[in-house]
Image: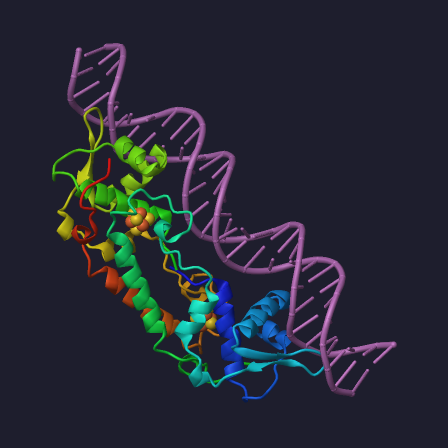
Length: 137
Length: 137
DNA sequence: GTTTAAGATATATATTTTATACACCTTTAA
DNA sequence: TTAAAGGTGTATAAAATATATATCTTAAAC
Ligand code: SF4
Ligand code: SF4
């Protein structure tokens, strides 16, 4: 019942960018220092956010990253759904499931219901809603 | 975003017992064979369920375990809440939190909201609701 | 009162998942 | 050509989970 650091870092990056001007380029180094996360690790998070089309990256000198959409257009639920890689909430949700109850167990539907409500809740918020008012220096 | 095997095993044990007569004693060995789970491991799960007051255990020859309440009196949400040991949904929910955003981040409230809806959903079901109609042999 | 079948407990090990580090590559403006 | 930026692959570490091993305790049956 927890998000991976990877997902949380992804959201932290988006929040960081969200407090800046729309077209302001920000460097990974700056963010990694602010959050005390290794640059290389954060680079992967950033790269993935770019693949997911949430941010725009500019390579080379003078480069940086920036949000591709306005904070109020970015849905928290969608971000989590795309960033968290698996939602294997129980064994029977996994490809290697061997639970003998699978054909007759009612729990799986209940868990699925709960998971949907979890995601649906997140989907009621946008990046704008969770943005820190200002970043602390 | 997943339950531990431990929690799932706990529910499996309760479901197993729920398909039996109220005062029928069932042995751990039988359950562990049915589910292909090591006896010793399952013993710990069972022991914990006893500590949580969900089941009654009888030691010694002729012993076994049985539900302490009727399936319709056992709430799935409560069971999960008691069995799953931590709900550290993000770094800031942990005792060793070092996230610099903590004082200003809006995400933590959103995550908490989502988690509550997850648990609340589970709380709408009882063991009776998820019971397999019959155990397969 | 000894045996046997049951659950209880503590510790160690293995496995899996997640996070981080290291090393090097590519791009582009100055 | 250099320097500052992001990109990529692989290896390692750390943490969380799950399982195994070994032994103990209880109580009914004989
Ligand atoms: S089928 Fe039921 S008991 Fe088996 S893994 Fe799925 S939820 Fe758990
Ligand atoms: S404060 Fe916000 S960014 Fe930091 S761990 Fe909590 S939810 Fe994540």
